[in-house]
Image (cartoon, rainbow, N blue to C red; front, side, top):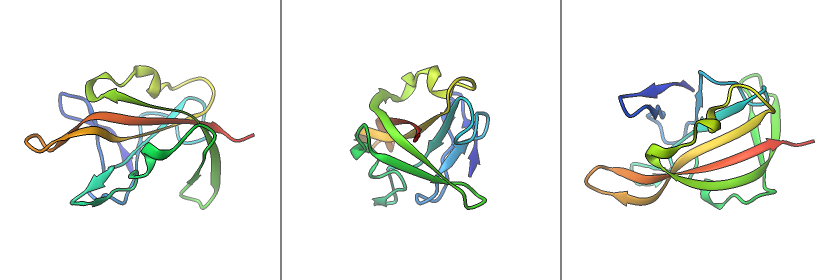
Amino acid sequence: MPAGVEGRGRLLELPDDGRRIAWYRFGPGPGEPGSAVLAAHVDYEGRPGAFYELRRLEPGDRVVVRLSGGRNLAFRVAARRTYAKDALPRRLFASRGRPVLTLVTCGGSYDERTRSYARNVVVVAVPER
């Protein structure tokens, strides 16, 4: 689903359904020049979310994105990092340069009071050659 940002904290919008994935609509799409950002829940209502396994991806792992027309694009993981929620680097949202796939979900410790995770898990992948 196409998504933007919400609130003053400029948080990425996420789908209401934990099985769906959001695409940052103000940036490029997968395979286009720049960083295509996809975001999804790690868990939702006590169940694993679409990006539950994201934290397990390692450099060299394969990621396939199925586009709405049915075409598949294959990528290889280049890096996996964690960042504080309020410290996602702007470069992750690049609108120019080589095509990159950036996958984002929650991680780190969970705060029951705020119902939020402390960090984001970010996986960066490049197109397969």
